[in-house]
Image (cartoon, rainbow, N blue to C red; front, side, top):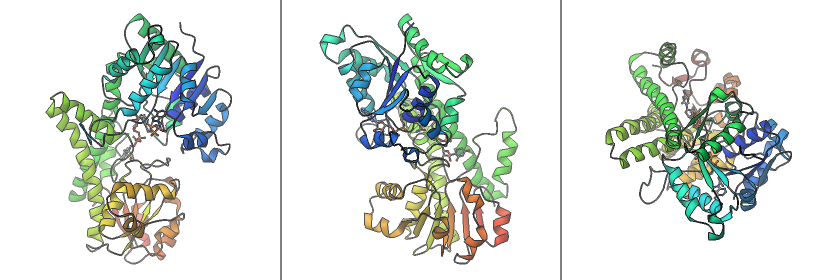
Amino acid sequence: MKDIKNICCIGAGYVGGPTMAVIADKNPTIKVTVVDINAERIAAWNDENLDNLPIYEPGLAEVVSRARGRNLFFSTEVDKAIEQSEIIFISVNTPTKTYGKGKGMAADLKYIELCARQIAEVAKTDKIVVEKSTLPVRTAEAIKTILNQTGPDSYRDGVNFQILSNPEFLAEGTAITDLQEADRVLIGGDQTPEGKEAIQALVDIYAAWLPKERILTTNVWSSELSKLTANAFLAQRVSSINAISELCEATGADVNEVAKAIGMDSRIGPKFLQASVGFGGSCFQKDILNLVYIAKSLGLSKVADYWEQVIIMNDHQKIRFASKIVSTLFNTVSGKKIAFLGWAFKKDTNDTRESAAIYVADQLIDEQANVCVFDPKVKIQKMYDDINYLDSRTDQLNKRHLQVVSNPYEACKDAHAIAILTEWDEFKDYDWQRIYDQMKKPAFLFDGRNILDRKKMKGIGFEVYSIGKA
Ligand code: NAD
Ligand code: UDX
């Protein structure tokens, strides 16, 4: 059996950082090095002040403070880490392609390929290479070809590579508990004696804290496809309840009551039925588009159309929310201040990738509204970057129409309307009477997350719109 003493992970992002921190915490005898080409990010991971870690996740700082400097290290020395490790995780980004064939749909695998080439160049001893990034089914084949056919001739013959697929199922905002108490860990590998030995080496690392029944082993292709499938199913649930929310608004049914009623059926279950302004995050849209692209590439047009509908519904929900604000405000928001509470794509994270807030703001800025945002964790510059990146409008116009403040009361003062875009718990505890008193009247409240007590808000005097309620 392989004796694992050194692990490295290429990519110190939302997955690589927390995942390796938990692996190091639970395996104190294994040295875990997380490497990244982004020196600023590595410096933040090494910052003595744990408030400056590059990622905000509840519980992360505690885990990092226990393991960092003991057996957890963050570094920019990628080659050195590859050379020293028996297991190399690849956890780099796999965004949707923005150019060429598959533009707007396929996963861009250039960062993965660069990693594979770098490993092939540097490795002088046998390596287990683990796909931690989310990848299209059959990517392991390409990685294997690169590993076996590139790199200096002098070492190529003597070095053996085993490729494993070990997708990550953590959700942001709950990453640490998702890792510590994972429903399951999935490990796909070759069903050869060498493949099985590699699988066992990785099983042993997770078995340091997870019961064996939760560590599932499969062939590589099942593992790769299961990750895309899991995200597609989860996103589909959100789009399904959001589709019903529009029907509720038209009929007088209440989407929360419908969700509760169907969720009590044990075949359906209560989770992931929260109607919202639309799902965001770096994964759902990207992974479904990838699934759609794969299905199309294989000529499976009905399969592709089926899953694409989940994205179409989600886009519709974001547009519908912004349009509702405009139509309710007497069909014009030009020159009106609209306060946004929340910019992150969900609570308890500072991540804004694909956040519904960005798209709703964009639509309102098109209507010349003045959007004023407060988010408890997202950095101010990040919000400006998000809105500038999204659109071809000039930076100047965006700056004029998007203001970011560091206090919720300031965001809401003199606003014609407030829109809740993220379900941060602290929003429920605000002094809503004070907020109401300082707003233009009529004071409109658009609760895109259904987190506020509608009756209480109406009692204060707000005109309230909640998702899926007439
Ligand atoms: P991220 O953008 O936060 O981090 C990726 C990191 O990889 C970046 O810091 C980047 O600098 C680094 N990188 C890129 N190329 C590199 C190279 N050649 N050498 C060294 N470093 C390099 O991305 P993420 O959110 O951590 O996602 C990573 C992967 O995990 C993606 O495939 C994603 O789909 C998947 N995933 C993400 C989540 C999530 O919640 N974010 C959950 C499960 C799976
Ligand atoms: C998702 C998957 O859950 C996770 O397993 C995978 O590893 C990465 O992608 P993440 O995107 O971090 O995780 O968060 P998630 O909790 O899934 O939420 C995604 C989006 O859906 C958020 O915008 C969230 O607000 C929204 N959502 C979720 C709803 O609108 N309603 C729900 O009921 C659940």
